[in-house]
Length: 578
Ligand code: GLC
Ligand code: CA
Image: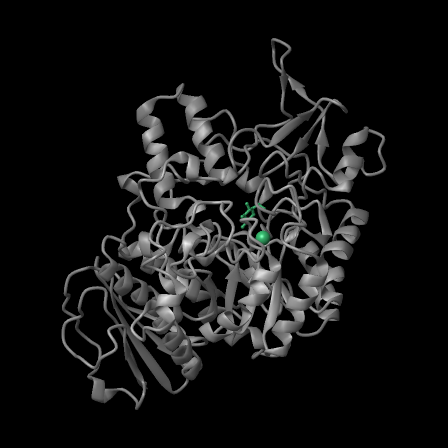
């Protein structure tokens, strides 16, 4: 919480666990909480101080647990509330913190509240969700109450035959939006999703879709910006709405009752973030911003997988996104996060580095580790990132993609184009690059069947084809592995936390297509970071000689002490006085 300028969460390295895909303990093919428990020492050994577990609550799993039917119970295939208690204890015994995902913009349509709400227009819980009567067009056809589209495509409204009204869902139709205008509803949300787990000792939350709770009154139509669809994304009507800061203030007051908890909100773009993360404003401790990971995505939410040459991922665009996130530390009392992967993103090596050969994979994964770990803010590492896991192989067909967002997008293109093969090929190419599925592939632990993820026959999602080569076990025993480098890098980051966690970012060379150079400043010292994002050797000007660095204040992703040109995907950092 605000109050101290050095709370535990600023220098903490947070490791994100996706329960379905981390470790299966009982052979049913689904990762579970006993599996997580069995790997806590591994997570700690990687250099993590905290674990964020993605939703493990009871859920029909239409959106992998982001559709919660009971906040106070665990999804049975994952385990029980007692398993969670054991994980909390295990983390605390090791001096680690435990964070949960707080998903309260919506519930599942199977949550008891929604079932009651939908049961009739007179239900006492009718107003806990957002219900509206139909509109009718000139021909008398029933139409949704407004033109809003959902994040996953199509209308954001679903007709309920039983009670003859539409309800709002900004995500899948099985994720009805809660009505935050109703105070009784808010209190009930806080009790079941926050107090319940805070009393059990969790140390904070990653807050899902945190700026969507307050909708513009009257729910006006969204401006017409996407000519390919009759439904339009309601950015200005649902994001950063009129009461959002009031609601976050209420939540913050609850967290304050539990002492040193932390919150990180899923929120972007940076233009809106300062108000949320200012320490004085007492809203969220930090944001998980989208500026950087969205570089190279399609033009808007509805078309995010529709990528073309115009959406090229260039280094100057990357640099400008970084500068805008890091800028929050320079000109405000707010805090940020540094991350390149999570369960909604493809694998960073495939996207920003090169997965063409194993050599380029290893080199570029280390480069990205240095990039991310020399940026200020709280660092988030997603499971598998520490071993340089790549996207799904290009040979995989659409059947291997399980994510509701991928499927809805692909089916949407099919419906819009009458199944035009060219359009479908383009849609699939977008998914091969950006789908959320890539990060949801089960973890590759070792070279045994099914990558050591499960000893059952069928993992819920296909394991990676390259697991015999790219796995944890191989890398633990190899001091030149990506995992060994991550461990080293996280240690280096802590040793020079004044610069690498708290330092002020200053771009030095940010227009080059291959090499990015920046400095990090503290009161008395500075770091210089030079990163070659290309597979060819590149000249580098500016950085000092190795002798110019402080003792122990130099690191190359190649692990040696060489000056001159940067080698393929090489990154170097120097620490010295400013
Ligand atoms: C967030 C989650 C994502 C989920 C969505 C709806 O963006 O990270 O996985 O689909 O919210 O809850
Ligand atoms: Ca299991």
